[in-house]
Image (cartoon, rainbow over all chains, first blue to last red):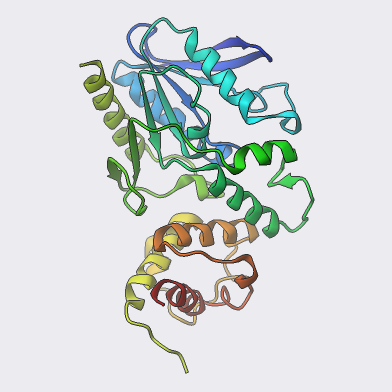
Length: 220
Length: 92
């Protein structure tokens, strides 16, 4: 079953929506999009990956993290610890081996969760994310002190990000064009840097196959 | 006079690939770019947000760092200018 279902979860800061894919039994993947602008660019692509995982019999949850998606929390009030706590709380409620799937700066979010493994696509450190945010703001035709490509971010959150690094990964995959270390590389364009990215069904299939194979190895 | 650094052709290949990947341009169209092909102001896909993405992607693929005060209209005026800029960064 690959249809998406809407659900929700509760954490200390309130209730947030989730999208669920695939079976309710067996190992479950909890996914995190990149932060801010790249989330908009990769959401459709991540859903492609989660549907492809469902086709392989692996269920998944894509939560709205606080301040994202349908969340009522203002990004101005957001701290990195909130994102981590919400993700960890959701993962902690699941009665199955939980695997984290993150894209780019989503890797900063799964740190505090108890996970059977962490799978990441092209992970990004907080320092690199800040550098990109500052460049985007500098490129804006309407520079605004607090606006980063439409996201209003507090000094406190920017400070949180400055030294934030992903938890040691279980498996890192990248694109063939990316020279940074990775356990595996796949051909494709970095959709997170495209203004109108669409999806990439071939890459999504390859990534889902990689993650499904890796989960099978972890399960031993 | 243009100084052609050794390795410029690899840098040129990377710049072509980055423009195709980030701007979502047809590979054939990008393959036809010459040194004189105008970029910034001529390609509607290359808006200011896309400039930030193109430069950051070039940094990643070429393992270079571009300072914000180095970014100006001249380096982005033509395909040749962008390749020259990237080659100077990557090959020195």
